[in-house]
Image (cartoon, rainbow, N blue to C red; front, side, top):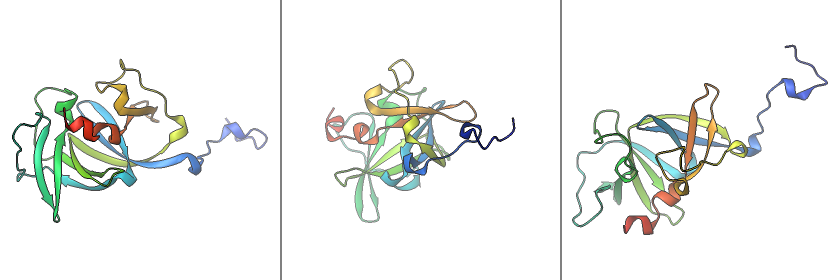
Amino acid sequence: MENDVNNPQTEEVIDYANTSEFMTFELGKMKYAIELPKIREILTYPDNITTLPNTSDWVKGLINLRGEVVPILDIRIKFNIGDEPIYDDSTSVIAVITEDKRMIGIIVDKVDDVQRLDISLLAPVSDMGSAIPSRYLKGFVRLANNQMLVVMDIEAVVAKKELEK
């Protein structure tokens, strides 16, 4: 198909006003994403986690990250993703900063890439479409390779009331 200057729909235009950068990662066989500005850093899975008594099984414990005490949460356990979680060389911790300025580390199977997404194209996720309940998700986009990328609402996942359960 030739580019027709009179038909603007023949060429894909990215409207950067509606785009944001996201870090993509894997949980089980699915790809998820978190807004890049929420991420402080990516860590390899630490072997010096201080465990906490009387906490949920998905709360792995605490680490000291440059003088800051950071809770480490395994969202694979919280959302029952896959079989028994594996902790190996590709297991990573994404340190996120919440709106109320808490730093929290979430364990993922593998950190992938940074991607720019048009957030106006986010489609709602039904509870049937993901292992994670829709209240923890902002929506999904279909990538060029037809793979589904689910955008996680990290604020909902690590909300204080979630940690009390």
